[in-house]
Length: 259
Image (cartoon, rainbow, N blue to C red; front, side, top):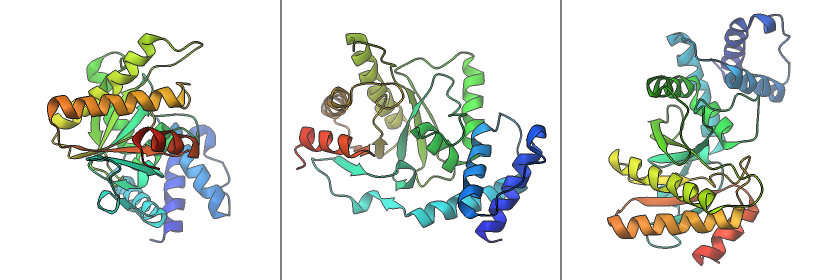
């Protein structure tokens, strides 16, 4: 199958699952087909999926990521011993684990084509990621606490694992508790990664998007927590600080002395 054939197959199957959308006309152009497919991935609930669907989906998503371009950790240069700074799409980074800034439901973002990292990671990992998260949350029996972490396979992402953590939501003035909870997110991910023999981990800018944590303070906490963890545990795990916005890149460069 070509990418277009795969895309149309996936759209058709996902529309069949949504009775109210079954009569929807599929756009002719590629960009709108991709937008529709992503939207359907995003709104898909926790329901069984056929092996045939997964075979086509996996081939489609892996090819889409290949076309975007995969960045290898081996091609990056450390800014300090064991610490890297990289600007780019975290869903295209090949390392042992990436960190997802999740919400307390821990099921991914259900808003069609939303710009958050949770949406992107779930989209390009495939529907298996939401199903895996659903099983974790069903066993847990309650929403995820802020500052904790969970681990799942990366499925169709270039990484082996995804670590999911819920950062603090800042409303109004930044509190000491907010700062402690953000540090806990980084520590929890590092500890869980170590338990799963992860040799390299990429952190996104946890809580700085929809959760409104001030960017500069968040970066300070991230760097300090990672350095303290490495010092106290003598961990050899390589840590990548992944940024997307130019603002965050400049903040991390200054704090890490990477100018």
